[in-house]
Length: 80
Image 1: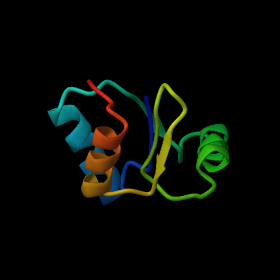
Image 2 (image 1 turned 90 degrees about the vertical axis):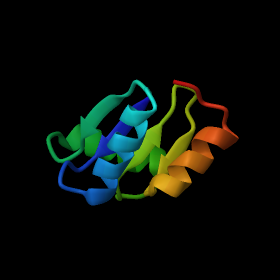
Image 3 (image 1 turned 135 degrees about the vertical axis):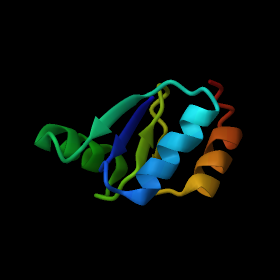
Image 4 (image 1 turned 180 degrees about the vertical axis):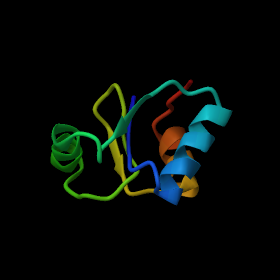
């Protein structure tokens, strides 16, 4: 999985904490460090907000909080 973030974003911090607490492995991508990463996130999600999660299966969850993340993980049966 890839987690696209802006490191100062409180929702991004919450997403990282949620995933870490449950043992999920992911690649952390700071979209403010690289324009190409920011453009990739915009292309796959259709928007510019973080956090955005991209799964190995190509599923995308853009601009979410912990509740949406938990529901997305459960609905798509994504395990750590």
